[in-house]
Every structure is written in C-alpha cells, then in structure tokens.
Length: 382
Image (cartoon, rainbow, N blue to C red; front, side, top):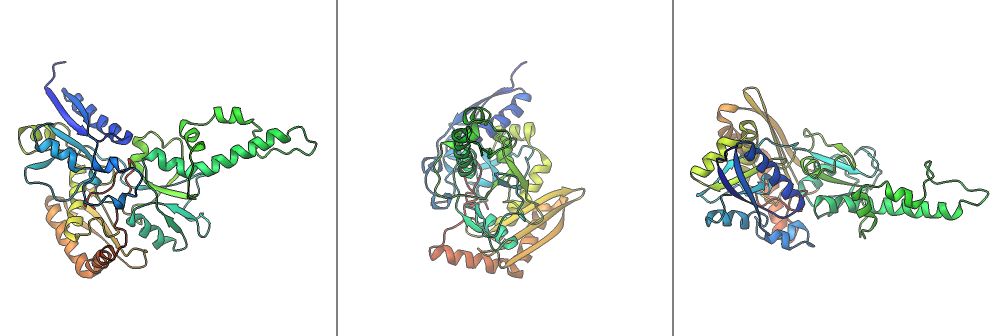
C-alpha cells in the first residue's frame, strides 16, 4: 500500500511510554503513514529513585520531547495527556487526541480485597495528593505511603512481601513433609520449584525485590495497567469515578506538533472528537482553578448526548474538607462553560483550598505529582 509520508515522533523510553507510542503509530499506519518512533530520555527519566514530587520544575517528562519538535528535529511528540502542562508555547498545538483509554483508577491488592474490606490502618501506596485525599475522605483510618516507579516496579513492591512469605511457607512444607503431623500450608501441596514455575514474570520479579514498605494496596491508573498488559496478572477493584474523579486527561494520549500542515494532517488522521471534548473540559477546569500539582484536584468529563457531564473534586491534603460538584455543560460551548463552572467552584471555596495547598507547598509540604503508571507524573497540567 502506498505510504502517505513518514512521521518522526518522539516518545519517552519507559516500557509503558513505548507501548502507548506504538498505539499511536498503529493508528497512523492504518491511515497509510509511515511512522518512526524516536526515544528521548527526559530529565524525569534520569531521576529514577526520587519521588515524583521532587522533580522540581514542572514538565520534567514533557519538555525535552516538545523542544525537539519546536527545533524542527522531529514532526511530533507522544505524551500521556495528564503529564502535559495546561499552557503550551504558542507555536505548539495538540494535533491529536486519539480515542481515550479507561480514565479511572484501580485499587490493586494481593488478593482482590475491596476498599471497604481493607483492615483498619491498612497501608495504601500512592504519591498522588489527589488519590491520597480521595482515599482519606472515604477511609480516614488508612495509612497512605509514597510509591513510585514504573507500573511493573509498583506492582512488584505490592506483591513482594506476600509472595516471599508464601515461598518461605512452601519451603517449610517441603522440609516437614515426612513428619507424622504434616499439614500443608496450601491446598495444592506443590513444591517450591513447581510453584515457582507457575508464576507470572511479574510475580517472579517480585520475589527478588527488596521493599522498605509493605503495602496492603496500591492505586494505579486503569489505562496504564491495561496498556502494560498486566491487568490479567493482578487482582483489582475499579474505583468509581463518581467518588474518585481522575486526574484531568487521565487515560488519554496526545500528539503535539508545531502549528501547521503536519499538525492538521495528524489531526485529520487520528483525532477522536469525543475524547478531545472530554479532555478539553477537564483541562480547562484545571487551568481555570490554577491548582496545578500543588492541590488534590480530580476532574472527570463524559459526553452524554448534547451535554458533557463534568464532575469536579477539590480537597484539602487529608480529604477532610472538599468542594465537590457536577454539572451538564453544552457540547457546543464546552470550553467556555467549563471555565464558567470552574469560576463558580472557585468562589464556592475551591480557591481557598488551593491557596491553602499552595501555602503548604511554600512552607515545605510536598507538592503533588500524579503517579502516572510509567513513572511519569503531571507536569503542571493537573
């Protein structure tokens, strides 16, 4: 089949980023474009062992990719939308928003436990102020502990203590098998080697991981877990978006490009109008509120006929105070309506909560970096 042209697109080098870039490449190739993916290591990727909120200047996972585009070296860049700042250089546009993945969060546990079933004082891992506040609003007794790394790393940190304990118990079973009062710890009565052979690669990786914190549960974005191909290897419960509004743009990808013919061609080829409308509402609300990465803010929009149903949640750090509201916004004027909605929420107390979060950040509290599942985080766009 004749090619329409070759596009050189930047992507981060993490496993999830490459998988997401491959989705965009596939869509463009289906429109007869040839696509070359160019891996760009970012500042955020280089700082692997610090929490996402210590990365400093916003845009650590975005800037370097877009700079290569603006310099004319590459035709575009592929981002997780929730990593992106709400403000962009005038000469740069979001050329396309492909069809969005699942926007919500997952509560992941070693055994499928629900949020209600977690024991009192359970330890839940997340480095997101939004998720922290939402969890504490529902379960003030929980202990929220930081968690960072790519999706595989985070899941291994959750699974490691439980799998290591099981391995030890199975070893003891093997040693005690010939005793008269032997009772196996597990019904399958497998030896350690047979048990190990039946584990997934994720579980085998967890067995060799040393962890400082033993988590009862962790929270990750559903789209990241699914795109990593790990949703069939863990037990999880979806967190309802009515109570746990996601980060603006969560689950969506974006292709940025210099304003011009190439951007228009990418738009015509793979832009998904519904996803663009929904994420525009979410990011417009965030931009209007001005919370960025310092305040726990969730925004979720979904097109329903002639309206966009938008839910906004603004919390204090510990989830004790909040401004929460929903509204149906006209599709035909969704951006303007989103700005008006956000302004009303600011007047109702959202601005006060955000300002308190800003003062806390100035006084040394840790600002938010949404813990995106590929190790990236928000870049001021949340």
